Image (cartoon, rainbow, N blue to C red; front, side, top):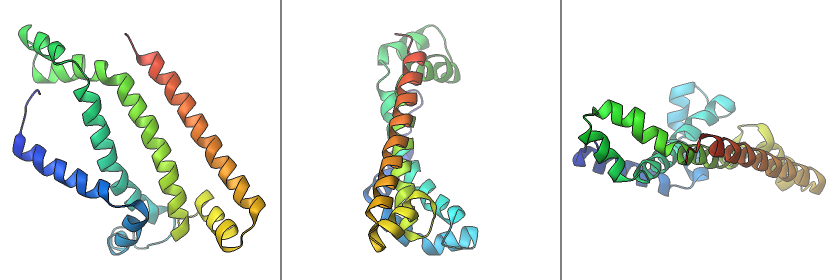
Length: 173
């Protein structure tokens, strides 16, 4: 809306759609050679960060785009009419108006990354995902599996509660 570049927008949209279409567990396995090249290993926390970043970036990009598209175009036009530069429009209009939605997007992203990181545990990333996989799926220890599930659900509830609180605090409407 501010400085439109249709070609770049189309290329980035295609990139985002391609990576959003790949299920995360498949992305982890598919990225093993790339992950080894970047961090030198394909297991562990540092190795999990590579596919987590690649998996989350397109998700975040689409959510941020939607947050900015929610800002009424009339506000952008009014700022333009008052002589605001594109930089001023972004920092004084677009971001403040989209901030509650951006906080909600960050909340959803953190919850999604919680699920992704648990899936990463199935391929050696450690954490609750690995405990759940090793003791719950492989060993079928029902108590351990239920504890892991309870902790993950509790973590999601905490993230959602904090996200809702912050979103309400930054909402000036």
